[in-house]
Image (cartoon, rainbow, N blue to C red; front, top):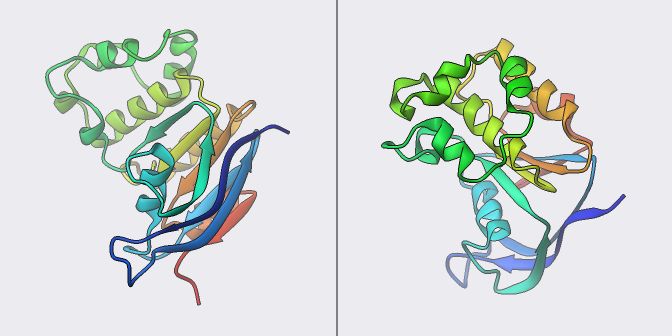
Length: 192
């Protein structure tokens, strides 16, 4: 299977004395889900910032194919003055959106609302909808189901797993059970 993410021997720290990553490597292939788990402050979100290019490692390399991401807070992922539909159409072709809407239990009328009119759970599902419609090779999920109740969490993760063909998923989660259920490999950061 083709590699969608290769992290080779990266080092990074906010100060020179305290590295968050020291020669850290990770490889992710199409069809794989890897979960990053660990306590708050250990560098899980920093890893995503490095993959996205928002921060640069002090050494090592990161190669990623086309990607999309879902953040923990859906309200920070959408501009408040544009409809959800406008913001999804801006970055996707919308191909196959009605089927995904149905699978997510979302009414199409929600797409024509401003983000603040939706509940956190509805908006997070719209964020996942947008990410899947972008047809990425690499999907970064940062606590993607934290705004959802337990039943919806499982349904959404099942939906993501169903659409994994051709892409790799890197999942940040505090939920060990969720990681154990869906991940091919669990990478523990900050572990002893």
